[in-house]
Amino acid sequence: MDALLTLPQLLTFLGAAFLLTLAPGPDNLMVLSLGLARGRRAGLAFGAGCALGCLNHTLLATLGVGALIAASPLAFDALRWAGGLYLLWLGVGALRAAWRSAGGFNAPLARTESPTRLFAKGLFVNAINPKVVMFFLAFLPQFVDAGRGQAAWQMAQLGLLFTLQALLVFGAIGWFAGQFGESLKRQPSLGRWLDGLAGAVFVGLGARLLLVR
Image (tube, rainbow, N blue to C red; front, side, top):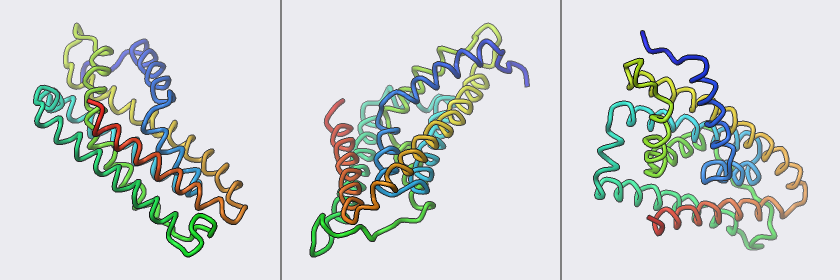
């Protein structure tokens, strides 16, 4: 195919994408809190899901569907409510699991989730976030060289590159947070507190998505 990204285009985009992905935001905050609470495998799985969810936004931006969602207040609000309520549901579930025992937060955490399930949750959380849709619509076109043609193909390449670097960044955050969290949880009751913290983060992000327009 023509209109492959040029080297300056690629390097400029990757530099900007890396800085934006590394900056504190909802996705890496969720990966960080979940890694601390559940360990390396959980952080890696959830982070991989969040990163690969960017492929959905790349597809929407490339096909122009994202622009239609952005132009329709009803569609945007529907996605916003779906994403916010799902984050609230995840957060409340984590808080309930953290509290569930006669000893409250003083008992060790026993509940675990499979990496596959956590990956699916990360994928879904990112894919239905309308603010990420808006971000991709605003960010990707800035690096498209209109003079070289095939803007949609260029955007598809940029979205794929963004996803790959996000996979590395979120994976690193999940790994190191999990490593640190596993060392903290050698104290008997701390694992439950960490899971409660993760639940509070999810509830806060869900409420923010619902209330802040």
